[in-house]
Image 1 (cartoon, rainbow over the protein chains, first blue to last red):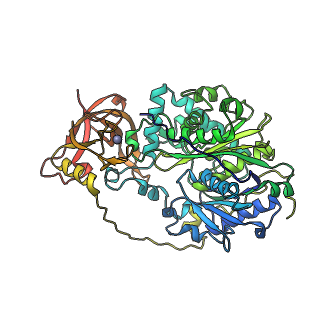
Image 2 (image 1 turned 45 degrees about the vertical axis):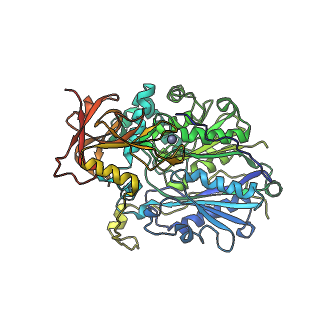
Image 3 (image 1 turned 135 degrees about the vertical axis):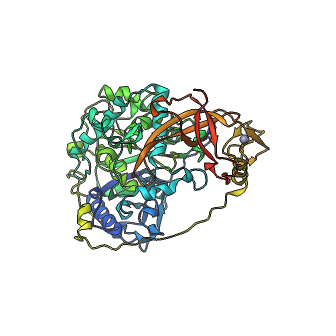
Length: 400
Length: 176
Ligand SMILES: [Zn+2]
């Protein structure tokens, strides 16, 4: 049953929004620093790149995922000081794994509305506090009455979605594994990477089974880390840089919680969010108009699934583009040039560092060894989370 | 406001101090440990209470919305698409079709299981297309499961049933 979910959306904005600085910590399985300290480190870098001090920041948006990892409620408040949020309007946003792009979307509306001219966005995650393994915290995502008595592991939903996707389009695991190979290799050029490496398709196919078809090397690792970026009004952007990167479209959408009632082969939650963002950015043919993409890749099949949701590939076509090298860093549609979650790491909300921050760096031509080969004007980043429900999408351009 | 640093490679540096498991075990790290014991009791609500009571009687119950015409399972007290109360309760069959499946080697804490188990989304016969529930498959080898396979519920005995999703022990192939 296809229902038009996003109809009659009106975009009235007070001013355009530019990104002028970003930062991130290293991503590792376990870091000594607390969440506050990690947030502080990421913010410090972003301020440095923007040429600002905390006094310049008017409002702060913080993104962080489930409190269960930290064993501490009111995490937004706990992280306040490290995020530079005290004594100014501050809020925490959270849509599971979708937070890494949703937090900058919230930063966008702070500035686009005219409420703030300078907004700092900070994302933090410290998954290692849940000991010995954060999987034990993940199990509380399941419905306590219908699901949890079956002793599920979170990986199940991804395995079920991956199998359905493979079945509908007749996709082989070999073709999906290529994403893991590509992203882990891309991550070799990322100074913050946790699990970069040269691996082969065979390594993926022979890695330890978790919940088949999902094997160990199909999955990104749990991580600690933080990321930050600074969003400003046009007159501020002009003061601090000659080369701002503009946010030209944002979109977000959630599909029903009754996930066993949906056909999982296609991520409608991403398609709806993308439709909104593209409409705002006046993009009608994403495959032609998007030069570089950072879709959410916590699992290798997810990059492909999300490319199709984002309209960067036809349904079932993303594995073919990958096999043909189109999505390589020197390809026609470089995808996850950062190394993504599969290579750099997956500190849930803080993956903003390899999604929104990376896209900004790519479009500002500051990605260093990770810079894609082709000339870039427009890019898209996306995140996903909750019970396979939420899609968050942001389009950026270095031309206004 | 100063002009930012624009001639740098980003991120300019990768701050943070990585630790290994060994660092924690050997006490090289200053840390505090706690094991909170928080208990919950979840009420099942109007719709799922009736669903669970149905399972106790060996029946799978769904609900119908006359506006969109959907027969839904798991049941709910309101149709989330039409945003109105449901109109009817319907007894569904205890057979269905495998929509997708996985062979799980890990438990909820990511520890290895002694034997892998098969989990599936099963579309229930008598409900609208794609109306599935998550459950376990058994009496079938992992390599023999396929999408589209017809399956049937294997129930606990009447005395054992308690009004829980586990009143269905598992689902097995309808034929063979
Ligand atoms: Zn209805």
